[in-house]
Amino acid sequence: MRFVVIGGDAAGMSAASRAKRNAPDLDVVVLEQTQDVSYSACGMPYAIADHRRQLDELVVRRAEVFRQKQGIDLRTGHRVEAVDTRAKQIGGTTLEGRRFELAFDKLLIATGASPRRPEIPGAGLNGVMALKSLEDGRAIQALLAGKSVRRAVILGMGYIALEMSEALRTRGVAVDMIKPGPVLLPWLHPDLAAVVRQELEAHEVRLHLGRKLQRIESAGPNQLRVVSEGAELDCGLVLVATGVAPNSGLAEKAGLQLGPQRSIHVDKGLMTSCQDIYAAGDCADAVHVVTGRDVWIPLALRANRAGWAAADNATGRPVELPGVAGTAVFKVFELQVARTGLNAVEAREAGFDPVETVIQSRSRAHAHPGASTIHVQMVADRRSGKLLGVQMVGKEGVAHRINAPAVALHAGMTVADFIQCDLAYAPPFSPVWDPLLTTANQLFKAL
Ligand SMILES: Cc1cc2nc3c(=O)[nH]c(=O)nc-3n(C[C@H](O)[C@H](O)[C@H](O)COP(=O)(O)OP(=O)(O)OC[C@H]3O[C@@H](n4cnc5c(N)ncnc54)[C@H](O)[C@@H]3O)c2cc1C
Image (cartoon, protein in one colour):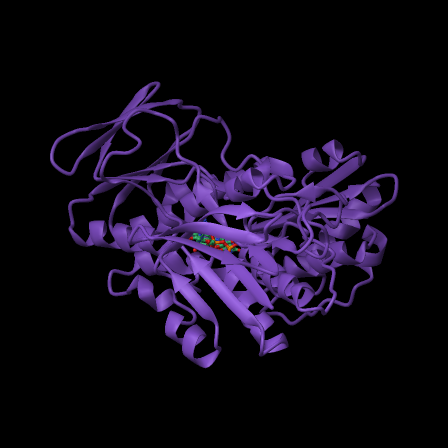
């Protein structure tokens, strides 16, 4: 039996390894269009921040290890261009231009996502770069090493854009960030977004909100000009960080059902609308544990977990994944920003009757030195009393604290249940009433 995997990063290589472990005699073939497999894209902004670091440090396991130690037939430089669901065959082209075809018994599509590029003149100029693959990271590192980049303009203000603003400031590069929308981090409560904005301004990152991009043009050797309504910004690097879109073209052409934002629709066992064809990772959708609806939230843990689960199912070990809570965290300069579940707007759209509380608490006990402010927002449903979501911003104690409400969302807890949770306390780590419990107590009174 042959299990073919398209895509050799988080979801694809997790699946290939797991399948080989479950069924050592299985013929596992991975087709990856680039020369890179199994790396931590999430680590790229931090590697780029440090001129001494090589992007290759982020490779988790090398292609030879998969081939020699795990017996996986890993073919890099192989781009899959078509899936024939009836003949159970895929076809494509190698980097050298050779056509190939391959039959499968079970197939996993793990093609990830690609950066969205603005459709403006000049978007293809040299020096206009996105950060998605390791190759992208190497290209940015090489450009920065050339020392021609004194100023960078970042298009977009999502989490990768913000992580990169810090990386570039650390490298001594002046940073402007620009987006057409009027609000920084629209999914974040405005009080918390204001804290992020202050942090960016404190590090001299210039924000240009509400500016529609018009074009990018050359402004001399190694220099670019970003032209928008009301601003012209000259720079040596334009970083495109305006979001990603699922790589679902293959699946769509093959007639597979699509889900939210044109991701590939899968069931809880990662099966697509076609028997024996699975999809996992950034190309596929998931069920949201709070709403029960299909969502597309492309993040790394889900990709790894869905890869495993798809392999389990393909090798006859049935498993279902309950879904995602949309738990995410990122760092921008000194700040940690985290969320899980829904904000009030999303909760209303999902049919809940949301009530929210925003408080400020401390990261350490009263009188314990070194404490900083933790901003917490919590949303619940007035009708059921259920916890729906939490957001936090602060200089310490945010990143891992978000995991407590994430677990509560998976468990379907009410705010009253959450208040009774036995959370850890010692003066260096929190007040005796953890900021989450203080917020939950306030929210309970408002329900
Ligand atoms: C800068 C950056 C920072 C991030 N930080 C975080 C973070 O802090 N936390 C977090 O949870 N997530 C983060 N992510 C997202 C995380 O990296 C992704 O969720 C994860 O990589 C998804 O894995 P995947 O295997 O589904 O897709 P990908 O990593 O996109 O891999 C898909 C692979 O498929 C290959 N492929 C595509 N089409 C074809 C084809 N037709 N034929 C052959 N091969 C093909 C691609 O070349 C690629 O190697 C970050 C991403 C980036 C770019």
